[in-house]
Image (cartoon, rainbow, N blue to C red; front, side, top):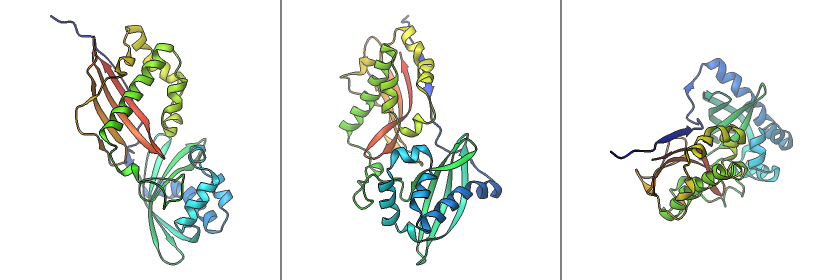
Length: 264
């Protein structure tokens, strides 16, 4: 009987926010959102930008933020109506709409992260793309489109090989630098070492995926949060490498947001 080598470990970032909570928490989490937009509406964009989460500032410079706010009319803020809040641990999401001075309603989702005891805005999404690094009129809508097959193959191979290189060299810094900024805020390099050290102990080499074309088990697809999922396998020898990869779009490219790998 053939012996099978099996090893599995899942690293997941939870973005599917667990549940909608009571009106009291809606009001509590809406407070930083209301303060933020009051600053924007009063023309104090510098203070509004300063009040956002660290991950927000990493993703967008003040100039990009200023351009985005003005281009979408948000500097004409009048009021806001937040209808629901959901959260998981230190991250949350608030949904609703902002009304401008001319009566225009701008539906949006705000992502929040808790820094210490304070909830801060980590992303503003009007159409699913979040803060732009170009003016909104120029920003490609790649985050709404499944990349071509050749690009999906490259993404899957790069993610698995980069992790394999980190395991083999016992240096996770290059891998860590390539993952989603939001994921970086939720996990440490040391944590990756603890999670994946068993691969090295068992003698599994994920860099075998280099040059191999992945076979997808199902069509690559988005979930309701706009995350891109790639599930499949690299038919390598002496063992195949199965993977489940999740990507978050951070303009101008998709960034790894979760990984599950098996060698068997």
